[in-house]
Image 1 (cartoon, chains in turn orange, yellow):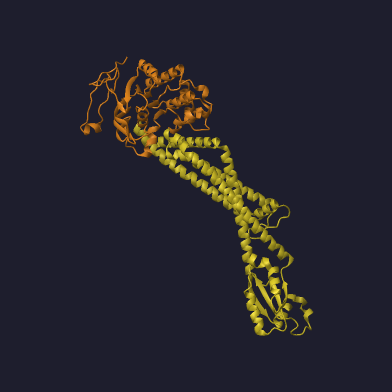
Image 2: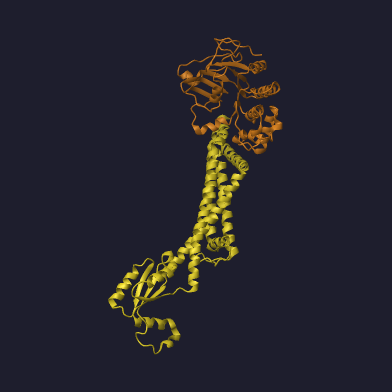
Length: 262
Length: 332
């Protein structure tokens, strides 16, 4: 569903993403871990078509989006559920109305949008907030509502930035369950997290882990899988680039150690 | 066919969502919408009234200008020579506010008087030649430079050498209408000022909404709304406020005209309403828009603009829906 190939991004004189290659398949939960300033959030922005990389390719559902014209980007973004670390809402609308907005972008009927929004709020345990004003929510409540908005309508690709931040153990557990359920329903879910507890819990339920440091994907650090199950893009092959042949179910890079998937 | 059907369905849903977002937008900024609506209504009523009142005043001024006749008659001293009379006539033409001067000999003056008296001209039987002095008929310029200053100009003429007496020919009704014209013009200006203030207020409200728009637009754009869907509610809200304000303003102007019972024309002078300043102001607006012509024109123009804005948005929406259908196919 999502493929980043040799993505590079520089902000000012700092290289934020350095030749990042990554894939997330449909039905998979992928966790990006790394410390502060590793580039996780920026990577998610590139994957969400909110930031154009300086180099490399971004493929979503077998379509390269990194070269799309600006007018076409809304049609990509409405198929991606994004939960930012600090979600922004429309002031004056209730929580439910804000969660319905992504479905409005997809032109879903109003009644279906309302149902889907309520279901999403239920998944993260925030149904009781549906009539609240987002401006009056606490940080953890805003985080939950942002997650619900990203999950509403079951988009095929979900990108979550630090989903467990500011959440207690119970809420973090509910979020992880919701993400796992979303992946099991066929979506590709990518989470960026610096919370080792969350990462460990996600790994236990079958998530793949990728470590990012200083904008580069780290290989061979601990029990991790860097890249799994992709073939080099046709464009890359045409340029004489690598074409990695990976066993379909092993999730193992031919040259690197991997973590056995349960 | 499948893509076309999907495009039609998507367009319908898209418009439903834009309507929903417009409702959200109006609900979020109720006070702003009310202020903008009121400002628009006042602006339309005031600008309509002042424009009509001003055009009415101008029409009357032009009408008065076209009418023959003099407003002042200056009687010359008997001892003035013919060249002196002509010099005096020339000098009078240079007085500010004087439109024309006509020298009438004694015989011409007597003939004019006989004509004015009509059937009662027999009253002048037996009047000897040279009975009436040579006169200068002075016609004045319209407006504040001339007709409205008839008394002041007459006073100035009386102080000129060679002039014995000056008669002001304005009747009491003429003078009342002149004063009404002055008041109408002043009130039209004040009403115009109110209208301009209302326009500035409406623009300030719109600017405030536009300044807030980038934050809202960012949220919607990140969620995948197209540019048209982001701008649509703002355009719809503007069109609704403008159209509703125009209708309210037009109805207000028309109601004032009906309440005060104007003279049924848009070129006649409005009545100088008795009572308070507000009453006189309402009288100006109401009389100027009596018959509803000017108010109706303003309503029609604003409604047409609102309809044009709505139509333009619908075209954008249709284009976006067709593109959306193609892109949806690409991701399906």
